[in-house]
Image (cartoon, rainbow, N blue to C red; front, side, top):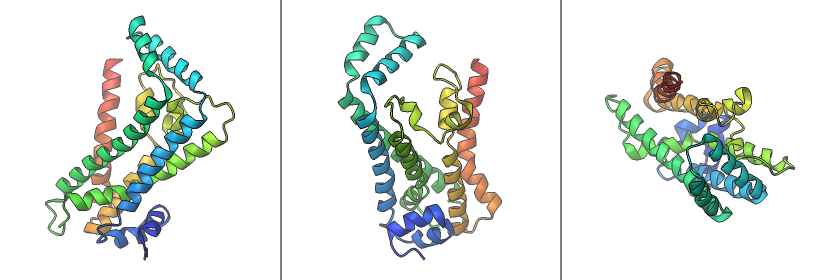
Length: 237
């Protein structure tokens, strides 16, 4: 049994079958994985901008915008003046952590709605929002892996999208940012499947769902989002 929230956070990664029942009724414990997840994202971006060759990064970003051809010279000049380190640090750290908060709010609403009809479910939005932070612990692993990659990089020339070391694009496909599939493949992270597995295990642990039903509920929103995205790319090409 996980004795405290920090241990439960670690157990969620190595022994989720132990952690999930332990955190079920611990109302304030979710603040620890919340701080670990958001803190790891903020730490990653702070470390990235402390080590990256910012002049190279700025030039690379402007070159990409110019190649895409949807901005005039005047617009590129205006963007160039905005692309200084401090605004980018703030936008990346705040934007990255807030995006995870928003995703977890959406996940909590989804789980609350799909489990509402279950007679054994007495969990409201607050409980599922807390649950969303426990199953987000793989984000901490992803951030640590990205920081390790930065630590062993001597050039300092790593683009922002290069931080996603566990995405399918980084691991397998390697398409560049000009490809229509770049965003799609960069969004598919192998650790996302870890979170889906944790959601399914949580539904089985908390509500007694069988593995098939739990896996269906856990994977459905991801299949819908990425399936629709892939279909859009195929139709637009």
